[in-house]
Image (tube, rainbow, N blue to C red; front, top):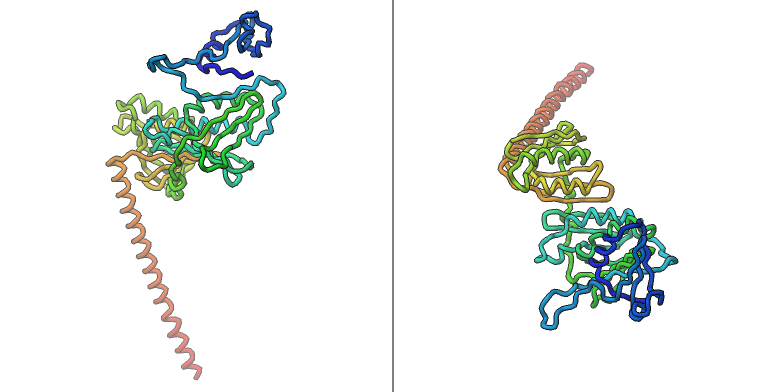
Length: 372
C-alpha cells in the first residue's frame, strides 16, 4: 500500500503522542470502521492512542487561483516490513559522523546552489564527502569498495539523516544513473527506510588543489581545551566574528583577543613557529567538527590552514590583518639574515680548509728534497 504523507505533520503528530515509548505503524487492512477502511489509511498505535492517517494528510495543495503555498515534494521511502534485508557496504555510525562533519560547512546562500550541497563521490575504493561555503572546505574519506558514482545532494534533504543512521544496524550506499544525460541518484538503504535523492544539476568546483600540501608550522592539541579558550575570548570581544590571534611555538598555542583584551594558552606538541588571525566562530565550529586531538598545519599568515584528524580534513582561510603582515615580513627578514649568516659561515669554513691543506703539500715537497 502506497501513501503520501506530509513529513512535518507526521513528525509533529508523533511528538504529540504520549503514553508509550514505542509506536506501531501498520496498514489499516480493513480493521478500521467501514468509513475509515474505504480509503487508504495508515493505522498508528501508541499506548492508549489509536489513529488512522489518510493518504495526502498534511500535504498542502496550491489554491485554485494559484495563491498560497504548496508542500515541496522530496520523498523518503518507508518500508513497513520486518524482514527487509540489507547487505551493508559501509558503517552506519561512520556515515552518520561523516555527515555531521560536512553539513555545517555547506553554503547558506541559495545564490550558490552547488555549494549548498554535499558532494558524494565514490572512486578508487573510497567514498568521499565534500562541502564548502567558499571560506571553509570539509573533506571526509570512508572505505567503500562497491563501484563508482557521484551525486550532489542538498543540505536540506540531508538534515536529520545522521540521527536516523545512528539507530540503523545496517546501511548500504549505492548510486544510480549510468546515463550521463540524466542526473545521478544517491540511495541509502537501511532495514526500514530507503532514502533516494536525485542529484542537483551542476558541477562541483575542483577542490583538491585547495587542500594545503606544504607547511612550516605544526601543532597537535586537544580541541576541547582549545574550544574552552575560544569561548573565554568570545566574551571579551565586541565583534560577532570575534577575531582571534594564534601564536604557535615553544610547546603551546597562545590565543589572544584581537584588541589585546585577553589571552589564553593551550598546551600543544609544536614544530616550528607561526602566527595567524582567524575568525573565532569559524575556528570554534571547525574544532567542534574535528573533536578529540587534531593536527593544525599552516604555511604563512595569508595562506589557508589545515585541520586534520582520522581521515577528516578541513581547510580554512585566515583573516587579513596588519599584525599578521608585520609578523610575516619579520619572519622572512630573519630567515634571509639566517640564510646569509649560514652562507658566510660555510664560506669561512671552506677558506679555512683550503688554508689548512697548503702546509701539508709544502711539507711533503720538503721531505722529498731531503731524501734526494
